[in-house]
Structure formats: C-alpha cells, structure tokens
Amino acid sequence: MRTLTALFFALLLLSACDRETADRQPPAATPEALHAHGEEFEEQVIQVTDNIHVAIGFGIANSIMIEGDDGVIIVDTMESMEAAQRVAERFRAITDKPVKALVYTHSHPDHIFGAAAFVDDDVPVQIFAHDTLEEEADKIFSKLQPIITRRSMHMYGNMLRNEERTNVGIGPFVDTQPDSTVNMLRPTDTFSDTLEVEVAGVRLVLKHAPGETDDQILVWLPEQNVLMPGDNFYRAFPNLYTIRGTSYRDPKTWADSLDMMRRLGAEIIVPSHSRPIHGADEIYRHLTDYRDGIRYVYDQTIRMMNAGLTPDELAPRLELPPHLADSPFLQPFYGKPEWSARMIYQGQLGWFDSNPTNLHPTPPAEKAQRMVELIGGESALADAVAQALEAGEYQWVLELTDLLLRKAPQHDAGREARIQALHGLAEREINPNARHYYLTHAGELAGDFEVPNRIVIPDDRMLESIPLSTYFNGMAVALDGEAAWDIHQRVAFEFTDLDEARTLTVRHGVTELEDGVHDDADIHVRVDSLRFKQLLAEQRNPAVALARDYEFERGGRIALGRFLRLFNPDIEVE
Image: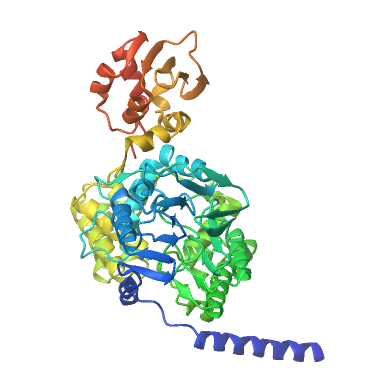
C-alpha cells in the first residue's frame, strides 16, 4: 500500500510540474520581433575601449580593430573586398597606424575574403589562424562551391528586393553581389592549440575553440579582460545546423568551448556578429545560457533517439526550457532547435531512420506518379491544393505541390499555388534563413531570377595563392562519371611558371592525379598556372584559353577541349 501511495503522490507531483511548465511557456517570437532585431546591426563603428573598435553593419560579419603602440591588429576581414574597403576606410579615419597583423577566427568567407583591403603591400603583415583553416577554406572553394553558393543565396536572400529582405539574423545583409571581388591572404602563423604573441605592444592569446567550425579560435586580451569569441557566441540561437549546408558541428565540443570562455572571466566580449557586451556578470550569465541551450538540445535529442524516435518525430518536440527560450541570445533568428536536432541525429546515426521502408525508397518521380494516380489523378490533386491554399494550410500546399509539380512540371495552377504558399509561410516565419529561402524559391518559380552557381570573383593574387591540388580536387568531384565510363585517358599539365607538372588520369569514371609528366600521356600541354586556374574558375573563355594559353607537346586543342568537357557537375533531375 505504501508503494502505491508513494506512486500516487509522485504522479500528482509530476502532473503539477507539467501544469506549471505549461503555464510558464514563453511567448513565441514573432516576425515583428525579427524585423526589430535588425536594430542590432545598425551600421556604425563602436569604440569598445580606448584601443578597440568594432565595425558593425557593413556586411554580415563584424571586423574588429585593436590599436597597439605602432600598429593595429584586425580581427576578421569581412565577406568581400568592397565591404572590407568601406570598413578599412573608417578604421583609417581613427588611426593611421599600419596594420601589423590579421587574425582569422575561422574559415567562413565572411571572415577572410576581404583581407587584402586592410593591408599595405609595403608593410609586412602577420596573419594568424588555426592550422586547419586553409584546408577548410579550400574545401568549400574546390569541392562544394556551386551548391553552397546556390543554397547560401537562398538562405541570405541575395536575389530578393530590398523591401522583401529582412536582416539575416547575425547581420544586416551579405555584401556579395555578382561583381563582388574577394582576396583572402594565406596565413603566415598557424597553431593547433594555443598561441601567445605580442603585436605592436599588444599581448594576444589565441586559443583553439571548435564550435561553429572545427577551425574556430578565440582571441583573448588578458591585460584588458577582453574576449573575442568569433562565431561561437552571438545574439541569436546558434546555427548548430545551417540550411545552406554544413558538415557535422559537434554541439558537445561547442559547449566545451563556451565553458572555456566562461572560465576566463571576461569583462568585455566582442563577438564577430552582433554588438559588444560589457560587465563580467552579464557576460557570464549569457555565456552560461548559450552553453546550456546547446547542451539541452544535444542531450534531449540523444535521449529521444535512444527512445526510438525518428528525426521527423523528435524535431518538432525539441523546445528550449522557458528560462532559455526567454534569453535574448537564444531567439531563433539564426539557428533553430528543431534543425539542430535533425543534424544531431544525422551526425550520430547517419541517414537511416530505422524504418525498413527507407532502405530502398521509391524514386521521387515514380513515387509522384503513383501517388497522383492513387489520389485520383492530376485534377483531384489540383483540387486538394486549391482547398489547402484557401484554408491557409501553406505547408500542406508545399507537400502536395511537391507531388503535383514532379508529375506535371508545367501545371500553372499548381505552380501559382506553391508561390502563394511560399509567400504565406514567409510572412509567418520568425527565422530569416527560412524566410529568405521561401521567398527566393518563390522568385525562382515565378521566373523573376535564376540563382547562379558563382557570385564572387577571386582576384589573381588569391587564385595564385590557392594550391594546384585544390583545383584538381575540384575537377575530381566535377567529373561526369557516366559520360566517362568508356574513357581511359591521361592528360599531363606542365606549369611553365612553377617548374611543376601533374598528370590527370580519367579511368572509366574515376580520376587519379600523379606528380610529373606520365610517359603514356595522351595529351601533354604547357600552360601558365594562373591561366589554368582562371579557366577552372570560369574567368577565361574556354575557346580563347585553349587557343592562346596552351602549348601542345602531344595531342591538340580539340582533344583537350573534349577532355575538359567531361568535368561538368550538371546532371539531369528526374
């Protein structure tokens, strides 16, 4: 009896706790709150302390200037040369001391692509970064550049009109246009764990702090108790997963890095996105909430995974506790707990959700055909779309038009309904990444624009600095494998300005790269390395380049042109 009584009171206590939790649910963030969030990124240069200034609102990221005795240090360098030049001009109005060092907090383009705008060619500059930064930067440039570009432009709303676009959650906008130029300068000083240096009389402690990226570092000024956390802390829920696409971001490691920051006892924190914060107690509180928000999402996702829930089941259930959901630093203006939960599942268990139906799913085109027939044909499905649209069930409209437009791509009423639903969802959306994705997809469907595969233009100095291996890695993942099934061909590239050579073999759909000129090369060409890089970066007309830039020792222009046409990432979507 005592056991039953204890169980009864335990159940009463639990139900009371549930009621209390339900009563304490915080108010949901609103689209209006998202628009008001843009005030965080008003364009200005803020004097943080006597010798530290931060430029906010000139692009998606901040750039920070630390003034020393006889020079300055720049932490993070914006996303384009144009954005960086505007910031550099403002910094030079504060001090004419030369830039003695650059610090890259991590490899994302908005922190490295404007580097050359800050430096004077006549003044030696140290460039500090983690020792994996170049590899990470080159991976995006060589392997994933087309898909990351397209998805980023959806997420940041680059193609949208100004009146359609809101802030991007961690900045006002991304300052990259079709004619934007970029010039990342290669690091001169790298480290793996901790590096203590003195530049222009300023003591810097650089620490590896993996989080949003594995190559993330923090900058600590111990004499001033100033912390620069890079992208591991900003005024929005963290992008544990970003819908532009990313490799796995380990939430446990990110939380550990925040613990390291908490122990420093910073009195000022200057993030690389959003505004500085003053006061040790306030900083500690916000870092703690940020850390706890990340750990809560991670721990509870793993808990639900172990209970057998699939990503579609657990993601909608992932909500922060009220005290964390109330934090101004955990509003869903960049990342979202539900997106993070899906990433954690994928990162821990991979793509398979344990449902045997999904081991060999019906291909999308065939599934659409079968589902439309099951529903009763295109007409019946179109009627269901119209009913859902009239009822304001916009997500259901998207799911139904996935089927309808897959089956009948030219279905005008279905396309128009999808466009209206995308606009309806955007109006309700509190996350700018999702909002811009909805609106950009709608613009594409309406024929208002076409999202390109490339947008920024690396200048020649940046192209020259990128290793040849990066370009050949890009060629490997661009090879049209099926088109090359019956091809076994070797092409030797001899680079006249480097006294180097590489032989690229295409062997029945797979590439192999070797140093030197292979004796059995079918084609042997000599070319300046910059001209070769410009061609692969689509900065040289292929016909003109093959006629003017390449000297043939074996083979000819037509044969090389056919070989290079194999490296085309486009495939037909069924």
